[in-house]
Length: 49
Image (tube, rainbow, N blue to C red; front, side, top):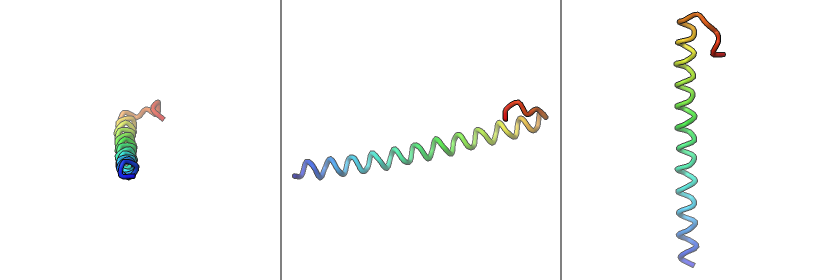
């Protein structure tokens, strides 16, 4: 029985870290997209969109 409880704890922590990494990647992509968008607007070309 203790083994099952430990497995559940590990699974829960893994899910949490996975969610965090997904959120981090999403934020990173958003920042990159905004940077590219601002650069494109500065250059006056709309090829990126």
